[in-house]
Length: 248
Length: 158
Ligand code: SF4
Ligand code: SF4
Ligand code: FES
Image (cartoon, rainbow over all chains, first blue to last red; front, side):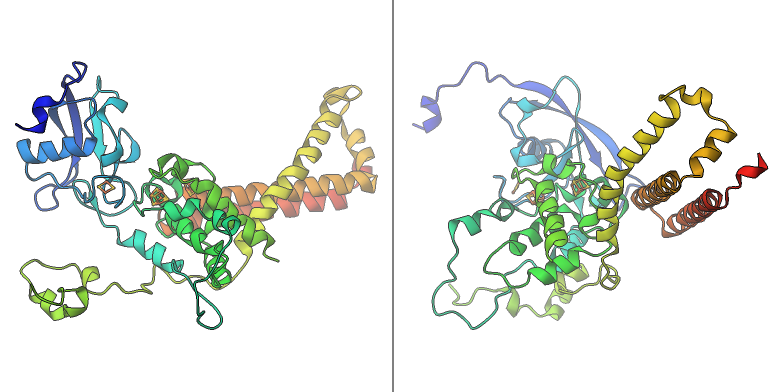
C-alpha cells in the first residue's frame, strides 16, 4: 500500500550508535558554554542536520540551531563539525570518523547567542559595505544588458556564494580582527567588480584597499577549504589584489 | 485569501515593538550604512606595503645568500674574517651599498612582517599599540645605528 513496502533496503544500511559531542550554551542559565554528549543511532547516509533534529525532537528540545532549506542552498546551518566549518545539511555521517565522538559547535569569530546560533549581523554588515549590487551607468537601456560568455565566466565562481559564513568564520585573521572584511564580503565584491555591466568597480576596489581590506589576507586557504559551494575563495581574493595593483 | 501579503513594508517598527517576542534592534531597521568602524581615509599604504614585502623578499634572497656565500664559504670562509677584512670591504662603495641595502631591506621587511603578526594576534588595541611602539623603536634604533656604522666606519681605529 505505501511506497516503502516495495523499497529494497540495502542490508549495509544498518544503524550505528554515534556519539555527538555538542557545544551547548544557554545564555539564560549557563555561565559559559560546555560540551554535552548525545548517543544517536545513525545511518551512514544520515546528515548531521538530521541527527541534530533527532536530538532536538527526541532527547533535548532546547537544542537550538538554524536551518531552513536542508539542501545546501539557504546557507543558514553553517557549523564547526569535527573542527571544520561545514553545512550540517551537506555533511554525511559516513564521511566522519564515528569511532570518536563527533564534535559540533557554533562557527567561530561571531558573537555566540545560543548553542549553534551566532549573531550574523557583523558578517552581513561587512557584506553590505562592499556594495553587493549592480551599479549601472549611462541611460537606462531599452533592452537587456548583454554580456559575452567570456565576460560572464570571469566572475562565474563567485556568483555561487550562499552567504553561509563558513569561509569568514574559518579565517584566522577574522578570529582576532573582527574589522577585517573577511572572505565572504570580498567574494561578494568580486562578483560585481569583474562584471562587465557594472560601473562601481572603482568604488568597491577603493573600499577593499582599506586597512581592513584584502591586504589583511594571509593566503592560508582556510576559506577555500571551508566553502561548501566549492568557490575558490582565496583565488578570488588574489584577483581583487591583482586588480588593485594593476588598475593603473 | 487576502490580496496583499503582509510584506515587511506593511509592518511598522511600532507594531514589532508591541509584539510579544522582544525584537532585536537590527530586525527592525537594517541600517544600510551601519558603521563597522570608521574607514580610515583613502591611502595606498597597505597596497604598497604588500608589494614591498614581495619585492624586498626577492631582492633579499640574492643579497643575503650572496652575503652568506662570501662571508662563510668563499676562500677561507669565516676563519678569514677579522677587523682588517671588514675594513677592506667597506672601503669599497659597492660593499657599502650592498650592506646598506641589506640592512634597510631586511629591517623594513622584518618590521613590516612583525607589524602584521601583531595585527593578527594582538586582540586588544592597547596591546597592539604598545607592541608596535616597541617594535618601531627597536627598528629605528637598529637601522640608524647600522647606517651610521657603515658610513662613519674608521679603519684607523684598528
Ligand atoms: S586565505 Fe585569506 S581570507 Fe581566506 S582564510 Fe586565509 S587569511 Fe582568511
Ligand atoms: S564564499 Fe562559500 S563559504 Fe563563503 S559565504 Fe559564500 S558560500 Fe559560504
Ligand atoms: S539548511 Fe539551508 S544550507 Fe543547510
